[in-house]
Length: 218
Image 1: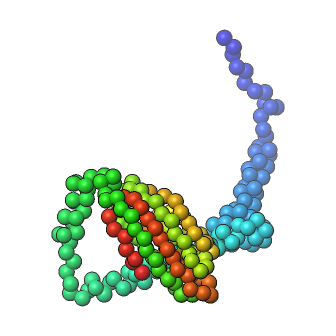
Image 2: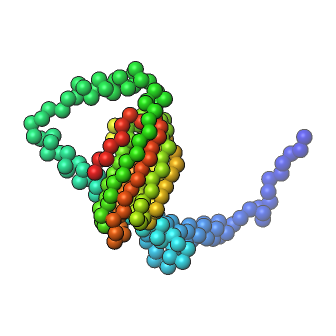
Image 3: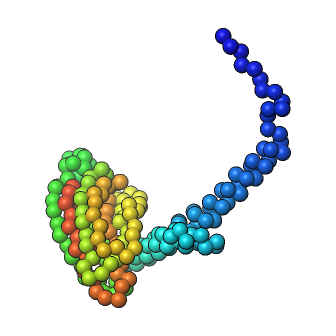
């Protein structure tokens, strides 16, 4: 057997060296925060490095799409809220029975109806729209959408039955997109598009997979 020997005191870093290393690490982290994280995530570029690297535009896209999606969700909630106070009593029993049937009888996401759909929406300059699929957790749907006549900003996201929210993908000035979406939870999963060009743009969406409904929600 070999006995490991304790290092000599001279081999250990001094307190001064440890402080110096800590300061260098903190300075490096600050540089990364200012030059990479802030521009790419929030569009904040105090040094100008983010613009050179193309990170600032990425952050501006994320910030803009998040603000637009939040504004439209709030508007949708404001439109729905008067109905809640108009004296109409929601059919909670029916909704509960539907959910019990889906969870206990239909079981997993694979029990959902396999279907195919095609929808199209024309957006004037500045207009937005949103199309959602009703999906169970783990269900999958393939999709392809095209912006005929121009490009659009988009946010592929979801709103859960239990209040969950998530964003799958975002983009700016995009002419087309395709792929497969897997539901992170039970709820509405789909796309928000906004036309920021000066001409009309028609969104053509084709979907195929395990979802029970497809609906234009705005």
